Structure formats: C-alpha cells, structure tokens
Length: 363
Image (cartoon, rainbow, N blue to C red):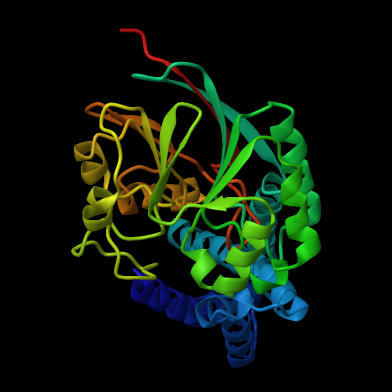
C-alpha cells in the first residue's frame, strides 16, 4: 500500500503542474513541479524518517504544518482529476474559476478537519459481564498521542471531563505519547490528577520514542504498567498485553517485537471462572481472545480511519475499526482514539474517550 501511495504521489507531482498550465496558461512548468515535489515530500519524509518523534520544536512545527499541507494537496489533486474528466480544459478566465473553487474546497476540508480534531467526545457503553458482582466504571483512553501537537492543555481537558464521570479505573491503552518532546516531568505530573486506579499498556508509538524514559515517567505518574500480566481489581481479572501481532502470519506494518497474541495469551495465568477484561492496543487476534475465554477486549489503534476516505481503508485493514462487537461469548470494544496522528485533522470520525460501565449480567 505504501509503494502504491508513493507512485500515485509521484504521478501527481507531474500531473498537477501540467493541469494548472492548461487552466492558467502557465509558461513554465518545471519550477512548479519542483515546488510541488519539495512541499509534498516534506510530510512523508518527516514521517518515515521518524523526525517527528524527536524533542525538536522545529521538527514538531514542520511536521504539523506539512501534514495539513499534504492533505490539502491530496484534496486539490483529486479535484483536478475530477474536473479534467468532467469537461475539457477551459479558457484562461474560466480556468481561474476552476482553480479557485478547487482551492476553496480543499481549504474547507482541511479547515473542518482541523477544527474537529481540537476536541473530544465522551462515549458511553454499558456492557453486562457474567460473574461480575458489582458495577465497575472504566475510563478507556487510547491513542492520546501527546507530543508536538497535544500537551498540557488537551490533557487537562481530558482529566476534567473524565473526573466528572468519577470512574473506578482509568485505562490508558497505548500510544500515550508519540514524540520525545512530551517526555517532561511537568506534563506527566498531571496524570496524578486522574481519579481512580490507573493502568497502562504499551502501543506501537511507545517504541518509536525513548521507550525507557517514557515508561519511567508513566510509572512515576502513579500509573501501573501491565506488560503481559494480569492483576485482580474491582472483581475482575485485568490483563494487559504489550503491543504485539496476532500471530506469526499476520502482516503488521507497526511490528515492534516478535511477540504474538496466539503465543502470549495462553501463558498468562488466570481463573477461567472469573470475569476477565483484556487490554491490547490493536484489535487483532480476535479468535485467540475468544478461544481464551475473555469476556471483554478493549482496544484502539485504528483511529476509526481518522480521515475520510481513510475510514473506508480502515475497514479493509482491520477486522474491527470502532465500537462494540461480539464474537461468541466475547465482546470487543474499539476506541477511535482520544487524539489524532499525523495531520491534526478528523473527518468522518472524532476524538473519543470511552466511559465503559460494566454491570453484572442477568442469568
């Protein structure tokens, strides 16, 4: 998929200036091709090189700006293709109108997505659990992505919103940070303000930053880190798995270790007669989770696709993308994520913190 995307972008670098030449009557095309190439390549280069994970404020700024431009450019490219097929190249005056409309539509798309990504929504789920003796409220927070784009202000808003719901437990289900710029004691000290017990499982992004420092700060913030282990709390067995693939045959572009759910989950000792909740960052290995007798699996990672039409691609890439699902006796709840990754944008999705109320199942 990555190679296909790069081929499409290379074609666009050639086609967009050519289309603008026919619409605007440009004399020279090569300066435009060079400019388009440099501007469009900036975001993929920062992303693939990992420069966005550094503690550099300049890298964070360039990453954020180039991400917005990249989406703007993609929208404009699609628009030019559609107008090319709909009608022949118009004259110079009407050509300017075609370009102006395309720029405006692309700007509106990016502007709306930028606005939508600045807030989050609390979504409520009530899930009956067999064998549970009393109600348990879990604030499920995945994919917060603290770093160059989200910091103290956003985290403080999340704390206030979650605490207002008085959860018994707060579960941070991976991708808490995506840049070393977030690894500051004053930022992580804020996590102590969350009410209730606090637990954390690793996502893939914790392995792209200074992992040891990130885990150290998370632990010092009073958050218990679960790495392929279980703990008993509030009448449930809570299992936390480190980020891993479903099995050896899985195609995972985010692979960070050789662990698999197929092999690791059976190793974790638990009482099969007691309620069990599993936290794993990515909604994969569903069959192994069902076979393991897990009552509820909590995941994130997908961002719901984050941006349309990426929402459609996510449906192809992941077995589950968002919301509550059931396979056999096991339920699976997938969060769209409390933050965003890459471009600060949300279109067709929203930043989400899930308030999960577990209640005793009626026999």
